Image (cartoon, rainbow, N blue to C red; front, side, top):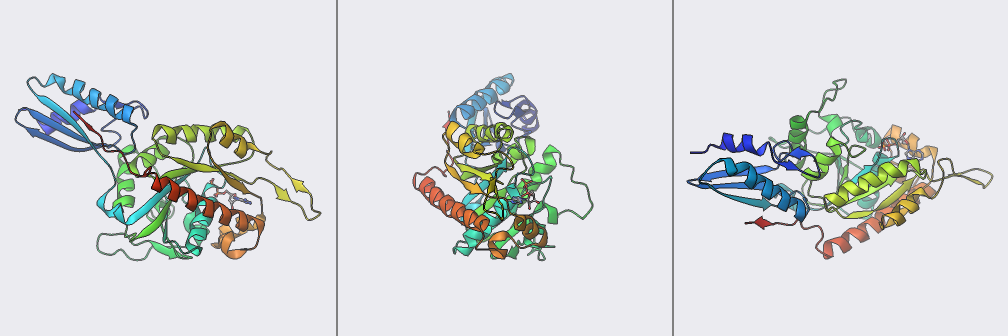
Length: 348
Ligand code: ADP
């Protein structure tokens, strides 16, 4: 009789075209059942587009043809773990490259949503530069509750960060399996409680880490943070493409560090201008707004007081609040359209 191990070995040859990795590397196999002649492989659909699911299902069948006289069935299940049913919307914040203000936007939007009365969580999944604890002035997590991690709370936002899970000074070297298990832990082993929004700060770029995270999370949508200059647009549009492939709705583009207002009333476009709007237009994505440059953003970030708290009346804070509001509106529209339901496809 065929063993589970033999099936697993065969599945290593089944590649997901959009990710160029196998279903095993991507940790998509949820169950392998072998009963008599019947082999059933259950895979997480994890936002895989329908045609990708069909391609993968065909790949599984062809890889298992080597086991003669067997009937192979491939099922897909939505990847939303039981624990996440209490979380209404999971929104990823991404950027084409580092340093554009992705974490700053994630933190301030989370705090602004909490200020408006929503129940908000913030997952710092930027494993290469987990700086959200500093931005929120959090040094450590509360003691775990049994085997569940308990998030820290700052400005009414529940927060968890990879940066708080490793010892200071310990290098963060993530290999596939480690990353996958860390993501699973972030998803399932955190006592989030009921949340209206879970904002996820993804690693910058469209590399493996960002991709596996985006695939592992049952995302309601994604927002892209970019600079006004055209060079950063190319990276950002790759990010857009990644979410499109994963069938995650793009909630919009945010242009950060758009301009600097000088004391004499003039405005300086330090990083060029108009790039965010251009990207939104070119990709038919909503433009969520511009955030000006203000040194208080950095000062607030370094001292653990986000600008929507430290300077609530500043133009930056105002822009961030407006973006948070329009984001909330877009999410509820997307939810009404049922777009945040992951497809469950049974392939015969
Ligand atoms: P990323 O997450 O994209 O790497 P960060 O959010 O860490 O970027 O921001 C990079 C640096 O730029 C931080 O020091 C941050 O305080 C600063 N910064 C971000 N947005 C602004 C802004 N609008 N005005 C001034 N400084 C900003």
